[in-house]
Length: 469
Image (cartoon, rainbow, N blue to C red; front, side, top):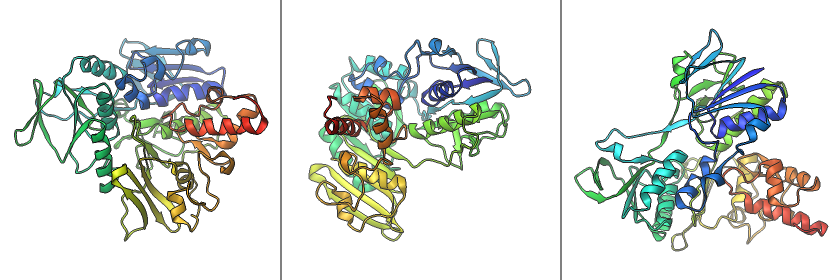
């Protein structure tokens, strides 16, 4: 099989490693428009903050490709697909034939059409991080435009470097897609205490020399302007090739396009009308395609993903999942709010099942709620215990930081779909620390938010057997 993968980001690189794990003989060629080795885009805010180096967010060792017989073309963009000849054409003029083609072209930042926007830097790639870090070294003030996940993470990273930063957001509250108004307000206050000034309901009209101009003429000082205004799927290559494209490249449950030899995964793919912008769905899709193209599981199908959004900003704990915007008329709502402590917890329950949740501040309940949301099973009658599992029993629900109460079926690592049972089996096979478990299962290698739970499980197993972790 001649497999060509267009895109060497988190989805494309995962697909390549999944295919090679199943098929040692497939001829694999991967094209990456970026010159970098594949890296964990989820952790870019750590690079901006200076708590991680580019090498520390790398997904594959540079020697991996040669060691596994994979041809990699870094910094080489694919410009066309010749479907009749089953060949891709690269920017350097080379033509690469394929039996199976997988598009993992990802997404690109939305850049608003305003005067002076060329003075700003988008926050999307490792090259962007390098530019932001260089500018931040001498900046006396910074503005981040966009109050979604990326914008908040960028602003927190800059504040952590000691740069006075103002976050501007068009909507009425932060992360309006994931949070309700009250959670957005508490998040705003939490970030404010960490040095991020926030203005919501704001429209930027222009970016001037050392200033950002707002609608109405107000000027805000800014030696550095970072754009985090959302992303859009990169679909030009697919559209030019005549594939069906709506918001993303349209795929079926096998992740195939309307050309049976071409698949699409990750942020460029649209499945059942939905485009996913998080890492876990892309990795799940990569596993399905790897099963199908290698024949490891010809019945593999992608049925969609249940998303848990985690904010990766230092000193801010936030998780949101499912349908968080439903009202009291549409669902049972259970909430607890303590603005002074920066704590907000909300459950959205419909037909006795958890369909959404927000956890802001100390998040000891996140393990329990993620598992209940993921399984879609009936909830225990004690709703208070769900919000405060450390104070009350939860009717058998598992708590991620209490390994003795967690069933083996509980999913510990959302990004990589790793269960407690898999971690236990890995430990029993000789992996006695978190690093060894991560190597064997990939747990902790996505957003990293499950690391405490994995450490707890490994520590508990070692304690039970009287061995050293």
